[in-house]
Amino acid sequence: MENLGRINGKTELVGLLATPIGHSLSPAMHNLAFDKLGLNCAYLAFEVGNEELEDAVKGMRALNVKGFNVSMPNKMKILPYLDELADSAKFSGAVNTVVNVDGKFVGHSTDGMGYTRNLKEHGIDIKGKKMTLIGSGGAATPIAIQSALEGVAEISIFARDDAFFPQAEENVRIINEDMKHLNVKANVYPLENVEQLKAEIATSDILANGTGVGMKPLEGLSVIQDESMLRPDLIVTDVVYIPRKSKLMEQAEAVGATAINGLGMMLWQGALAFELWTGKQMPVDFIKEQLF
Ligand code: NAD
Image (tube, rainbow, N blue to C red; front, side, top):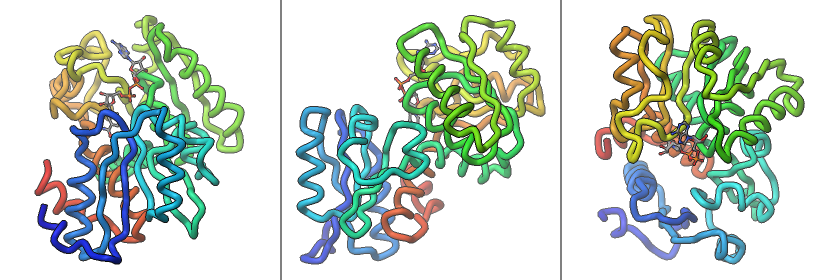
């Protein structure tokens, strides 16, 4: 990699603690951006699971790193090892970005922020909108929390009857009770209730898929039964970005709805982490050109 040529005694380390890690686009994304802006930083990925996490964070402290990303399976497990949490992390119970602020490790979740920022790039402000969100896992939870923090009016969460359903109930409780001051109305329904799903989509501005349905091994599948549940003035978003055009994106395009895949969310969660570490904006157009 060309940026390795400029590593010297003053290079600051930014890391990633996750497993499996080999497929991650984050090292390429951040190192390209450091290079482009001439920042003396390097981003390295470390294969770290739950068992090694506490020691790894201690190591990060001892090395006084600039910050680091956390991905699965560590996003929730890292909370006790940090000094402070931003609201994005506190309410979603997950951290994907840690910033070293004068020796204090502060946790943020830029996944949801990446989602809303990507909507803004498409000229959409979440404020005052009604959203139907499918899912309650690692991607859907920060989308729900950040949408609430940014003033969504109502959010109806649908989750299928699996181990994630209690998390859907908890996300709704957090929005209605812990985030009561924001005046967001949150509802939870079983995904199996298709009539309710139809009714909620019909009164929503945004339909968001926050599950891996549409991506391997569920490629070619969609969280909605058919496109009659969609309409041209609906905004349909997907967290899935491989393939670029999931079944849901195809269904949205078929009725002339706005279709936004997960690529922008992925790019912007990285760009917002970059900004938290460096105080500088990631050159996103350059990164898109180089990587996507
Ligand atoms: P997760 O395992 O934490 O959660 C999975 C969610 O999908 C749960 O709510 C589960 O109930 C639901 N689900 C799984 N199979 C389902 C099915 N057949 N029908 C209905 N619901 C089903 O996973 P995650 O980390 O939330 O990741 C979900 C997807 O989001 C993955 O495809 C991942 O690649 C993608 N993702 C994208 C971004 C981005 O920036 N675009 C970020 C994180 C994750």
